[in-house]
Image 1 (cartoon, rainbow, N blue to C red):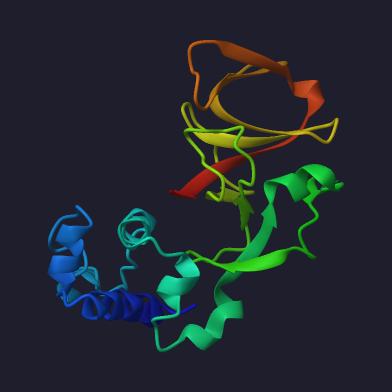
Image 2: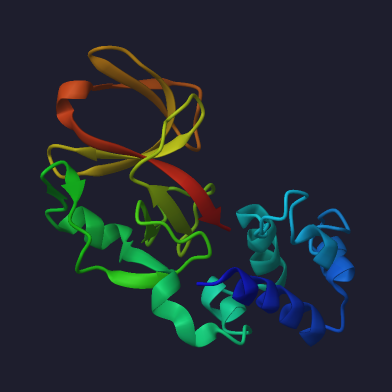
Length: 206
């Protein structure tokens, strides 16, 4: 996925709705200059990508998926180059996913994502167990290689092959302290010995 294609999709979305880049930003509740062409290059000359948060706001406002957004770009045919592994949460729960300290994601489906990195993967929440925070159909982007800090939302892979979506509080040598993403009043303790893997949720489509 190319930098130019993502910005082209922003411009095409604005044009489709009879808006300027500034008008598009205002409609999404962002600073009016967010999508201006003057903001697409940093002062040091490096390319500046639109933030994931700003793209997410566009998807919300126009009720479209990222695939539909990116399809507006002239480079939409380059899908595979900007894709990351994708799986539904129920399928992830059902399979033996943990092999040699890594997720076995080679045979998963693919989904487009602008910040293409080998460490990222996508999970679709196909359950209502996490309402109202994550509704059915919510796409969460998870990093396999990211530091985890207090208040980060995480995916916890347990040795009994179950999976939990939680908010991280702290960690001791023997315990992980978390809270439910919807009910943060009561802390939950999980033994480190019962955990295979913890990955940080870095982006959510809502």
